[in-house]
Length: 146
Image (cartoon, rainbow, N blue to C red; front, side, top):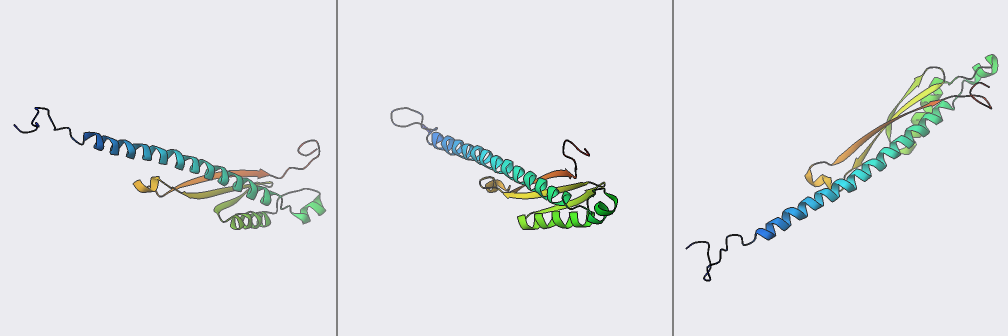
């Protein structure tokens, strides 16, 4: 008879625990990779948000001095704001876009690419994260315009 040993027991399942252990180890490694790389993506999102906020603040702080001295009104110098925000992003080593919005707002969008550690084994080499922040030029002591 095929599939039995001398004592009559079936030996057809020999090695099935080894295959199960290999599959289980692979699934555990995949799950651990997802958890680790998800944490890295969350940290990259936090970094992108922080950089967008700081670049927007750097731009919103660039006031039009001529308009402030002659008219007494504080507005953002759009060209200087774009330059300041882009300089901040360049110094931080990230790419992004800077858009003046109205007379007193600057919007900055930052994209950060985070390489994956373990998910690269299944073809996911990096995760891209994009965050946007807007900064307003506000004046006043007790509140905006006061």
